Length: 133
Image (cartoon, rainbow, N blue to C red; front, side):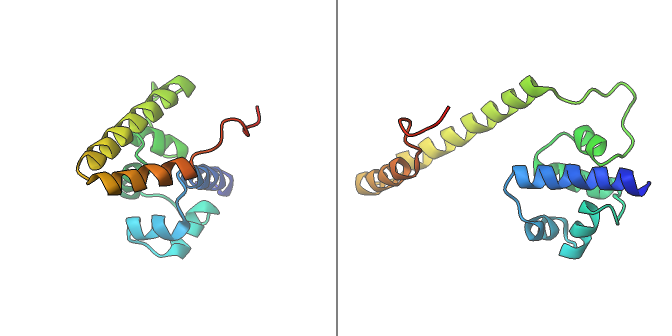
């Protein structure tokens, strides 16, 4: 792997990590490596193994082929990376699963606690009248 290819893989990793709000330390712990190793991957100083790519796919909740392509590892010649609509559908599915989990948890709470959670959610929600766009 050339330095440029490694750096491109590192940029991809950093983007994916930041997109999910993950810190370098969190990725390092999840992979069972030192934070310096993750920094090395992000700066193109260290190479990726197939095993680590599989672990990363689980952490990032991405398809293994997408991770392998992002890291510059071998993928089948017929591989097509997911497009924006594929991503949107995945995000919608994840949101629907989160909403279902929240509803389930709310149903198990007493009324006072449920009201407190709803008030916190309203306080955290962006004000639609103050949004720009």
